[in-house]
Image 1 (tube, rainbow, N blue to C red):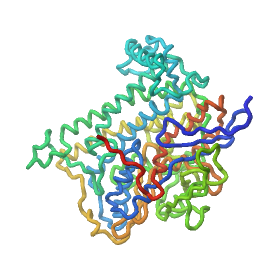
Image 2: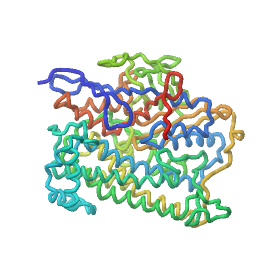
Image 3: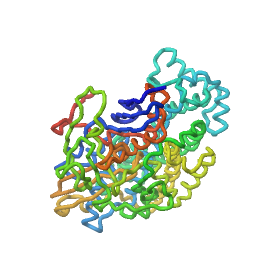
Image 4: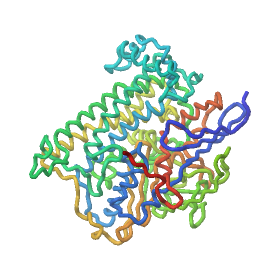
Length: 591
């Protein structure tokens, strides 16, 4: 019998950034209250003040290297939205929009696969147990769920030997510092070996799929973007330097476009034959997690992947909407301009507002002023009755919301997307769990997999559309009109939003005299990982941990890791590092 206590997990590992969780448990080990604290300080908004809005993407994109392109894309969309509000005939070329869609979709597929295998799978897969597996039986298991080519007994024997060398050498390397042998692990050795093999395969797979970003954006991470289009001129030649005076030397040519087609094929093959079968196979051993980690019951999707443009939400492949109290029969609309809809609170955050910390602010009127009142490190516990996080607390109409793959899949399901409905219903039937299992740690993890298949499948249509435009003679990728700030109105404001892998992302900009007067980034992990607000409402992480979690061993809180990882935290997105003067902390020179 355990005693009531507060369990501290700091840092949460296998995430991007620095996150601290404090969970109060009763004598049975059940979590009664949970607190999520971001432990890095935000600063990008301050750094951007006074800068050229056309350059903002290059700074904002450095918010995170894992999410990479999403902040750059949201940033240029914020400037474009400001222009569109002031100049109604402003538009983005069709090819630029398609290329942006392809880059965003590739990011989603890449990110979700990496999250499952390299950040989340080890909460369910016991690497050391894989040493006990029979490679022949593992091969039979793999072939029973997929036609993936790498599934012979010899292949799994080789993979097992690789893991064995790690263990026998006392150097688990990437598999170190986990809770191997914990009774919460339920997979048989053969399933563990199969998953570990796919973990290693995914490392090689990602090296290939990022080529799409390098072709359209010049590099990865942090591909290049451009207000008014994309920096990807298109050449109809198969070799560089063929056009007049070599003008297409840096253009995307037919060879590069064929590589893009190959990447799309690789993505779909791995998702269909490895990721989806693995998710269903592993989930079948953990069905009780369909009744744990439910959280808020409120879900929000900003919508994305336009068939037309960002000002025509009815053309979005991922629809916009809000679901409240798990009610899938009603999807509420979102008004970005209503000052009472999206607001950020700092009651329990280490910031201060000029009119008091009990009031929420719409991002266009947002403020970023540091106000650290927490304990001096090192410390044992946070004072959760007061301010305890560097994350703000975003709310929609005063309600805490969950964003991310589960929210998007639920909104697609509720709005009648045929593929989403088919995949969700098939998954529920295969796992033999009720629809309520969607609102859980298991449902969150499964939704990410299903969304990956939906997005990967849709990439071919986007690529075909791009190729159709090129064949018809449309090579335009940039609208140079209104590029010069001297053509802009004196005052403008806009919002650039998108569905990043981890959820709804929005960048809010106020422009005065061609310079940034205010900039606010409200990111997915701020919505999900934020602390309590002025009325005491917990954030999504906190609420999820407070739903049906009993810790087997407080010193090995794998239950906490499973639910937190199901959100795929990216705390660097939610809080950004700077020194008290807003200057860079360190400069690294590579020789």
